Image 1 (tube, rainbow over the protein chains, first blue to last red):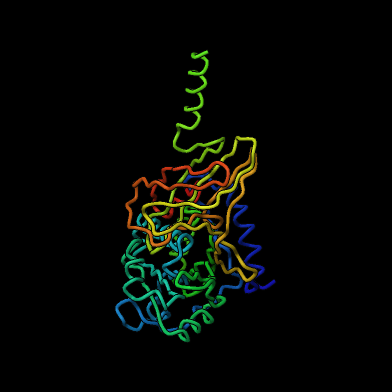
Image 2 (spheres, each protein chain N blue to C red):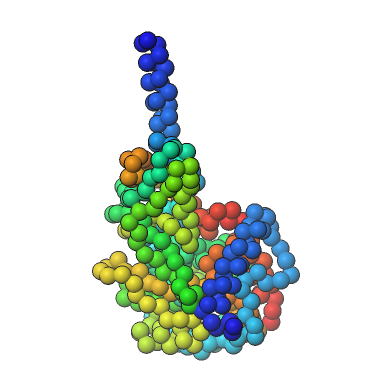
Amino acid sequence: MSFRSGKAIRLLALSLLLASLLVACQAGFASDELQGLVVDPPQPKPSFVLTDTEGMPFDFAAETEGKLALLYFGYTNCPDICPVHMAQIAEVFDQFPDVARNSVVVFVTIDPERDTPEKLRAFLDNFDSRFVGLTGTEEELGAAQDAANVPRAVKAGDGADYTMNHAAWVIAYAPDGLNYSIYPFGIRQSQWSNDLQILAGMD
Amino acid sequence: MRRVLAIVAVMALSVTACGGGSDGIVVTDARMGQPTGPNAAVYLTASNSGEQADRLIGASTDVAASVEIHESTMADDGTMGMQPVDGLDITAGGELTLEPGGYHLMLVDAERLDVGDMVEVTLNWEKAGDMTVDVEVVDPSETMDMGG
């Protein structure tokens, strides 16, 4: 199964969750190995330009050159998964300012209808005002998801309270520009700490 | 006789006196991630020591416009979504767990709250009726059990 297969992701995510339950209670988990879902072979950074919360164009590859880049496609109406990912990353940044200094978190909304730049900014400021929020047209956002090798998000449900079905994993690009690991929902705080420190040094 | 009645009455009262219990159902670990967007999610564990099964069919709170019961799901391609569910069953002697990535109570249009706030949420059980629990507002990264 290639890593691109959704089924592979699902199976690996489930086994990762099971494995993480075994070590979940260990405080200060540390290891030389990446705890996220390893991507083999490592993938190159996608190329796309979207619009940030100030209305300025943001060229993902250029703006994250030489830095640890964490790319995530989500939406602000999301009650649990999106905030948990962002909060866990922000927690690592608080504890390790050196890692934070050479990192860029990029949150791309897949719900441009409801996520205005203001709403995106307010959402991200809950976690860290350095997190970048990106939006764009439906076409631009679709192309960005394709380039990042994630299934395109789709609307679910009717009315104003619709939800989004989306790829809920964070894609990490080391400073050398390669994607070595992804982080599906279920990753523990200690695993984030472990991995971000390792990835920050891969340049 | 009066004394026996008094004792029985006190015992009956004490069973229901604790904020999180009713007819054998006890709720623990009630928590929610600090709302960062329009919606927020409440998680908890319910244990049913009673002899009849029950079903959580709704909830309400003053800090949100409405509360829905949702289930997060992962599709074959790894994407995640969520859908509303009518109710969540708890067996006699069993447990019901609401946790990130699984079931949660979704607070629609939630007020801004601070970490450390305690919020009252009233759970509606089909048999046991209404039960008000205190939910602690925590940093979203701490909503996962043993999140360390």
